[in-house]
Image 1 (cartoon, helix red, strand yellow):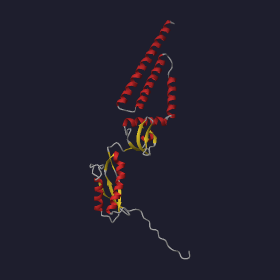
Image 2 (cartoon, rainbow, N blue to C red; image 1 turned 180 degrees about the horizontal axis):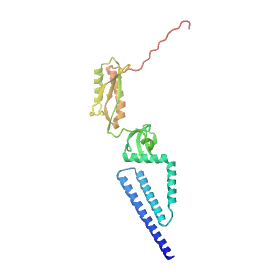
Image 3 (cartoon, rainbow, N blue to C red; image 1 turned 90 degrees about the vertical axis):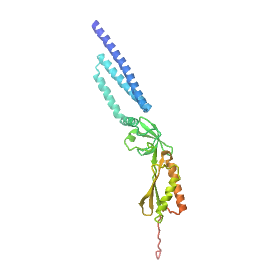
Image 4 (tube, rainbow, N blue to C red; image 1 turned 45 degrees about the horizontal axis):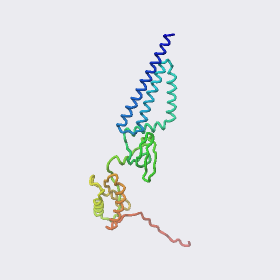
Length: 264
């Protein structure tokens, strides 16, 4: 009887030691994970979630090991935990998919807060990168929450990743226009605007001979912050300067012929 009691006492002591070591290991691993993720400047929510997940996993393993040390059959317990985890995973597959996508976005950094992007059929400025969804602000000041799974599963166009962009305009003139004069005037208009970058050099040339117009490609380079301002101003300036120079900009026309039918 004394030997049995001694065995039980030793088993309990070993179980307590296992729990204590597991607790220390969980805290240590969670702290290391949080520290590494913070050094990489990952999302604080992701760092906290990952640290808590590791902490819970290690403590769960320590509890099972302690119970096994006490002679408790843990095979059934492990099976129950596994089945519960599978059921939860199936029930939350979309949420877990969004979480995994959020982790990939935060690690590979396809975009950051403040970037102007186009993805999943939405265009806007990234306001917040969450672990389940990304918050975008549209040009008309709407807030859209896009699930990360949709973002990672689609093409992502990041307009802010480079410091400047090419502005593409198509300007049509009549077939009676002097092409050399038109090109010279377009060159002067771009050269007079300080927002047009000298390098790379703007491209101006005949793009196509359309049905009713000769279309010029006008492609200056501009800093991202000046893109839309220059876009609107160039169109207005080109129209005014063409009017002054007598260069016509064709517009769609339709001839309607009316016939008089006798007796009606």
